[in-house]
Amino acid sequence: LHYASVSLGIPSKSFLVALDTGSDLFWVPCDCTSCTPTIITRSGAVKNFNIYSSNSSATSKEVSCNSGLCELQKECSEPSGQCPYQVLYGDKSFSSGVLVEDILHLAIEDYEPKDIDSRIIFGCGKNGSYLDTGAPNGLLGLGMGNISVPSILSREGLIENSFSMCFGSDGVGRINFGDRGSLGQDETPFNHTQTTHYEVSVTQLSVGKNLSDLHFSAIFDSGTSFTMLNDPAYTAICEAFDAQASHKRRPSDPANPFEYCYDVSSNSTDDFIPNVTLIMEGGSQFNAYGAIAYLSSNVQTATIYCLAILKSPDVNIIGQNFMDGYRIVFDREKMVLGWKAFD
Image (cartoon, rainbow, N blue to C red; front, top):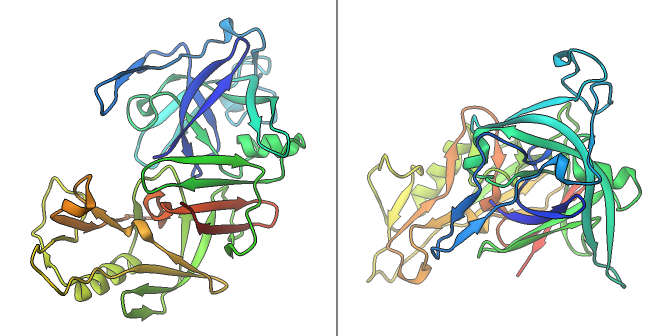
């Protein structure tokens, strides 16, 4: 997952939120019963997290049940009551609480950088298993639903109806609201569906020297760490990869989520790791630089690598690992996905 720091309320408090294009609601921990106030980083340092409280912000307002953005009106005992929310995620985690309105503080990078404030509606998360897993300090839903932050900002005329996310292979990235991309980027249209997901169509698969005509739809979801494909796409990629990889495949390991892993030979002169490329509707190629996961922090000394694709029981998801090394543009005005290599 990739994260961004956002500031809410007056006086402002900052929150380190997970960036999730697979959902709509922005929420932060708020007067909650299962918050994670601190975590220990890889370096051993203690990271303290803020907890939002509507009573502590001078600009906070309740969102009533009769709001057009209240999806759980049937749960309300009276129209003037505060709107509840509950979000369920694909990994069975959840967040629940009430909706509030407050000021989001943004920095706009233009010819003259400036700070702007916008009133947004978000979730005051009082309960949720997601609080102590991938999003201990909140989650920024970036989908196409009316309640998402990009939707609110574009409706208010503060940004163009588009945003981009840069995914560095080192885990460092950024999000730019209003970014429509650049000349020379590859593009493919979004599918018109009844959901608020960013769904695209893949028309061919290229694995090493193997090219197959296999048509399937997939959701671009930055909130899913690893790409998940169902059959026939999963089996087609894995078998084509395994047939061409020059290294010895390892036996299955219950502790390893990946099915296809290989030993790197230290004295081999004929190393070949097949590239994985998705050919999108319209013909543009999406090279999956992050399709290979080395089971070591140092690629040069790694002795094991895996094809970092998981088998999905239902929908196809292009996860964050496939987005590594790219600037991904979610252009909701043109209804296209754009991408370009990013350093």
